[in-house]
Length: 304
Picture (cartoon, rainbow, N blue to C red):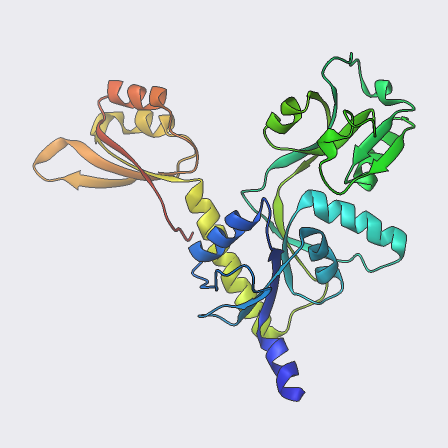
């Protein structure tokens, strides 16, 4: 027993969604951070091959509770699930403590209200006294109560978008990414009540030193991967007397590296990391200032 307890103090336990909209991106993120994990999703508990890390593959709505109950150290979950579960657990008298480690650059979506396309919409007052089908009753109640709307919530755990056609509800409140599913079911999005993205959360108590060292290392790699994904490495040859104007055109760029070109006193090579998109119009403006051989290259990994 003591050996098991010792191991639990040294291995970082992370809960992630077993299957769903965050699963593929989370697995890619682990891979980009150099964490080698068994890719068989039928295994609910996976061990990293090269680091003292255990991965629990579970339902997304179980992840907040696993962190809040100190079963795992980290959880990767959407803010929509995190907020809904926190409110549910508060009502049930369960632990709700957690800390946000970092936001992730994927999983963006919104919780929105949708009504049949043929119905007129002038504002949330149109929902007064209506039945609204949702998987997120607490978030819906909080949003509409703040606006003085009295309604009846119809709890559904799936296929929420069919509720109006089935006569179960007058409107729905569900996650929306592109809106294509709503249109396919004769619905229109009318009101956004919550914006969400994926986050890493951790338990609200200090980790053992061994676990904290692992967590700090992974967090550094995570931030490096996310920064690299949003950055580009830009290279060009530029007139020496136009460096100030050229640098001013580069979006979100740090001070560039200037490299002398052998045998050319008028021009230099300019290298810079830009954390914003470089549009064609900007590249054309750079060319007008005399820049040439402009290359924009993606970055795989990056540490500040």
